[in-house]
Image 1 (cartoon, rainbow, N blue to C red):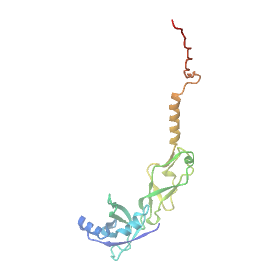
Image 2: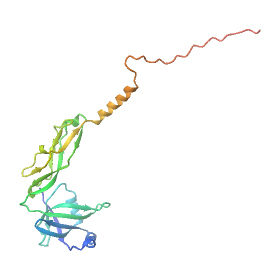
Image 3: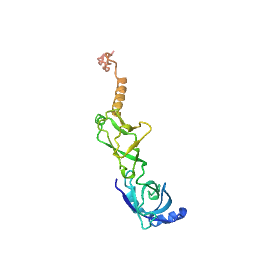
Length: 227
């Protein structure tokens, strides 16, 4: 996996007012923490964060560049990012420092590849899970796990136990959850319903069909002489 480099600076932890000052300066207030370090307040350039972090999928290792020795060359994962509900601006970020020699538990996105055989017959590909939990070393974190759906017919499914994990990665699960399936076509159901409605209004087989009423012939006008 590619490691993303990010410029960071230590900052003072002064509560909400200090955080607002950091945002006004064009930076994102953040926190760096981990099992072997106490939480360290840091600040990240907002534009760089949006360009390098917000646009990538899945979990990526972040190597921190800094003139401050306490955070320089630290490697971390983005654990949580808070965005403004209206503007979409980054409000805060949590970075979890990792030990490159210790395994992690994290979620990795799934990519469904190929065209399912059932879709060619009118079925609908229905993803049920978009990611799975894995265990691996930080250096082995996959960007995604590919799931080939080509062989799926209508009503077929792929379960988590059928996934092929990359080398060095173990997929974790307690139950054999369905990841993706092919649903039957809904168009056929609509056609069946329309046919049933049409059949209700049609005459039964062998029943006589009423003929259109014919106009009666005009009677000749009687002519009478004067009395």
